[in-house]
Image (cartoon, rainbow, N blue to C red):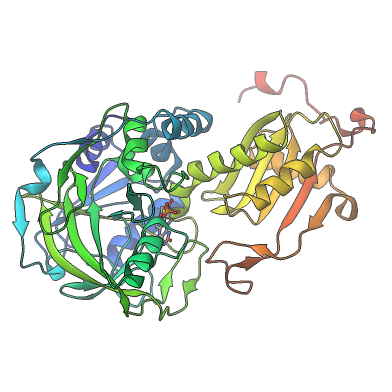
Length: 450
Ligand SMILES: Cc1cc2nc3c(=O)[nH]c(=O)nc-3n(C[C@H](O)[C@H](O)[C@H](O)COP(=O)(O)O)c2cc1C
C-alpha cells in the first residue's frame, strides 16, 4: 500500500510471481496490448517489457488486468475492504507535501520529443498511439485547488497531443474556462506514479478536493510533490515520467477512433484541444506504462470497478438504511465496470428496491442497469445472481424502464450523453410465502470426495 511508485509495486509483484518480465522484442503497436488483452481474459500477470522495438525505454503493462491486483492496490483483502478504503481515503485525506527534488527530476528535457517514449497503440482501428495511463494534473481556476483525472491523449506530433476531457471533468472544465479568458492551461501528464495516486485520481470527490490528498489517505502517508520545470504544476516526486504541457483550448486537434471501455470505437472527435508539450522530466531509467482499454475485459473497466462500487453504495445508502453488498459487473465473465450495478439489501418495505434503483440510476456512478436482490444472494457468485433473476422476477411487475436520463458519454446505443435506464427488482415480494423461494440443497455435498 505504501508503494511510492509503480516501480516499487512492480518489484513486489515480481517477487511474488505476479509480474512477468518479457525480454523478447515486442512492438508498441498492438503487441504489448495483445499480452495485456490475454492477461485480462485470464486474470493473468502484469508485465515488464525490456526490449521494445525502436526504444531504449522499458514498458510496464497489465497491472490492472486482474481483480486481485486491484484489491491489492487499494489495500483490501476483499472487495468490501477495498471499497471501504477508497471511501475512507476520500474523507480521511492526507494533504501532499512539497519537496525540492525527487527521482522524477533526474533528467530534465526542455527539447522534448514524444517519439522517444514507447507510447502504445492498443486496438486495431485506433487512429494512433494513445497515452492511457497518465494522471493529468492542472490547477483549477474555479476552485483554486489542484485537479487530477485520467484522460486519454492521442499523440499527434513530436511535441503535440490531443485530449479527451469533457466539460464536467476537472481538467476539461478548467481548460474551457481558461480559453474563454484567452489563456492556455498548464497541465502535467504523470506516468508511473504510485497506485494510490492513480486510484486517488479517479475518486469521485468534489472539484474542491485535491485528489493527491485522497492518494495520501489511501497510502496513509503524504504524497511528496516536486514543482514542474516548464509549468507551475506540482507532480509526484517518485513518478517515472512527467510530460509538461499547455492546453490550447481555443485550437482544435481532432482525435479518435479509439477503442473505449464499452468495447466499441469512439467516433472521431473534432472538438478536442491542441496540447503542446513544453518539457519532459523523467527518471534516468524511466519506465513508461500503459493501460488497455477496449472490449471488456479490459483494464480501465477493472480500474473503475471499486470506485464505481463506492458510488453505487453511496447512492443506495441514501435510499435505504440496509445495504449489504454492492457490485458493478466486470471481469472475464462479462461487464464493463460501469453499466451493470447490483445491490443486495435487507428489504423491510416492498418499495425499498425502487428507492435504491432510482437513487443509483440517477446518481453519479453512470450505471445504466440496476438490479436489487435480497441479502441471501452473494453478488460475488454470478450463479446466485442469475438464480435470483430467474426465480424471483416477473418482468411486468419487477422490471421498469426509466425515461431518458443523462447517461455515460461512451454508450453507443443512444443519442450522445442520453440513456434509457432499467431497474430490476429481483427480491422476494414481502407478502409471499418465502418457502416457495427456498433453494434446494443436497445434504452432505461438502463431505464427499473422489
Ligand atoms: C484508464 C482510464 C482511462 C480514462 N479515460 C478517460 C478519458 O479519456 N476521458 C475522461 O473524461 N475520463 C476518463 N476516465 C475516467 C476519469 O479519469 C475519471 O472519471 C476521473 O474520476 C475523472 O475525474 P474528474 O471527473 O474529477 O475530472 C478514464 C479512467 C480510466 C481508469
